[in-house]
Image (cartoon, rainbow, N blue to C red; front, side, top):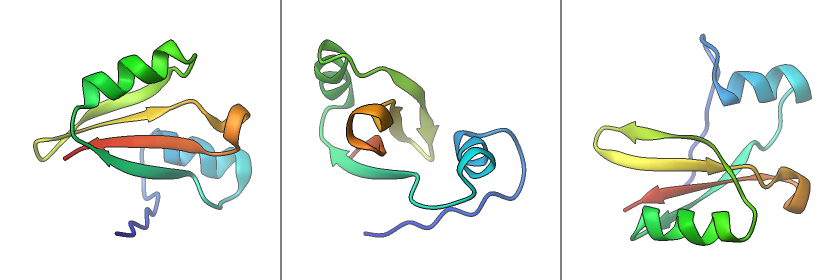
Length: 78
């Protein structure tokens, strides 16, 4: 599955990325069965959540992994 994001308005992590980097690949997302479990595991490894929420009943979280692996990770509960 491929998702393309276009920043139209607002202060989002996508708008911040666009302003700082001028565009490019912002994140890679992974579907996970248990978001809370994945976040606990990630935080134990030193990754911090930079944004999380729920859209249309689907929970998600972005992790600050850019310094470690060069890109932000997203977990989507499915």
